[in-house]
Image (cartoon, rainbow, N blue to C red; front, side, top):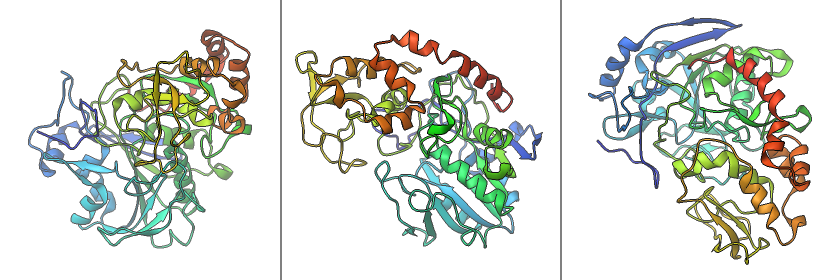
Length: 425
């Protein structure tokens, strides 16, 4: 049984959705719907409840495949969908985009809202995404990564319910959770319920990194959470409500279609690139650590076929590093850092990536730069790190253990808060 998987990926467990939890003003009702899982799969043309798996545990079933659970909530409603290329319903052979699937089921979809990288996931990181029309369905698409990061009142006038279905990777500066914040806020202000189809967090097994300081909040990090937050989209939505992070402390009426058989220690592969520059499992596992290079003048593989699996720059010591590469424009990176320049650095594409966050790569690059003043793009690095202290600690020569020791109290406090919003073990 085959799926179209992204390059260099071994697919573990990818089926998707299952119990439902409804949250409004802090109240919740959880239904045990495991018995309906097989019916859902059969309804979606899946006779065996897995795609590809090398685990003995039951396969993960994501929210999008729980059609019999959430279709009644859409009946007779005018629907808007927040989605990108990862928003799919899995079939026995491949998958169908959630928008196409709902249209085939006669759901009245009025419009689509698209996050960073666009509805079909082809735009560069940070690239302005324009409003438009989907050529496949004719639906109007409104960008949430440009002038308006939040749906306007006018855009929501003909909407009765909103669906949010996007694959996240569990890192604070990965902007889909910021999009979630603005969607929740817009829905709360217009009294529109939000249906969240939950998906796994591929970096959900740990929590690490500095906690964002409020004065450094931005679209790359809006809330006081660690760099690696350890929550699914559904759990994070609960936290946004529970911690009163929306403007004027409004609360969004959310219904979460929970996954079946997921826990935070499960390993699995994503079936599709969550964004153009995360092409495989290796890049996703290294992303929390190598993502910090986005706030520096060091290339992290953009402009190659090994995005977030290598790092380098012309000003790193070529006598120290034996590896070199040249970034060129490609899919997802029209103008990579050090375009057409030889970069000296490290290739991580073949190493065994561990599911944890480390500073060793960025510390290695800094210590082996021939001109250390060229390493940090200070304002941008502070925005990514969520604090100005980390750059100073690296420049001062502190060890990784010493730096991580300064995060302990904040991380312990966050873990206590996080615990009350978890849907999964």
